[in-house]
Amino acid sequence: MKKKTLVQLRHIADRIPQQCPCEIAAFLYSICEEWEFAFLNGCLVFIADGNPVLVMPLTTIYGTLRTGNTLYILCNNGALHYFDRKTHQHWVSFLDNTDEDLFNSMFN
Image (tube, rainbow, N blue to C red; front, side):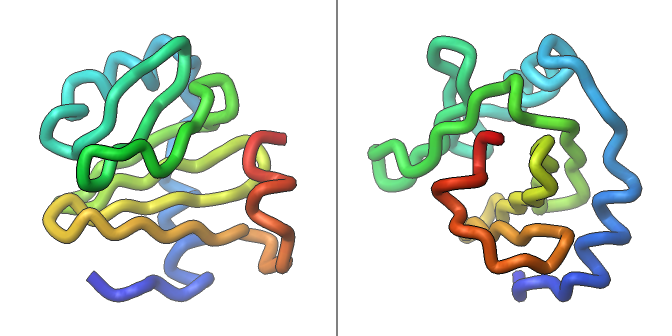
């Protein structure tokens, strides 16, 4: 899968419904083994090669969407994460097109 343009990502984000943490957990739990992530202490933990690579508290997630082999996770701060199931690639884009430092703004 190729990295998507900002216009494409904004269109996808418009299709993502707002969900409560319980809805998010129920949806993601049903696909966690297939997508190689786990839940730990209210957080979604993405695993690559047996090591955690990204930890995302469920309370920071606005909503989720799965289309084919791509999982989209929209965060409350406007960051849209998307993951390819086959290649396990991960991308993140801020929908407002800012160059915010990912680590400073990921969980705000």
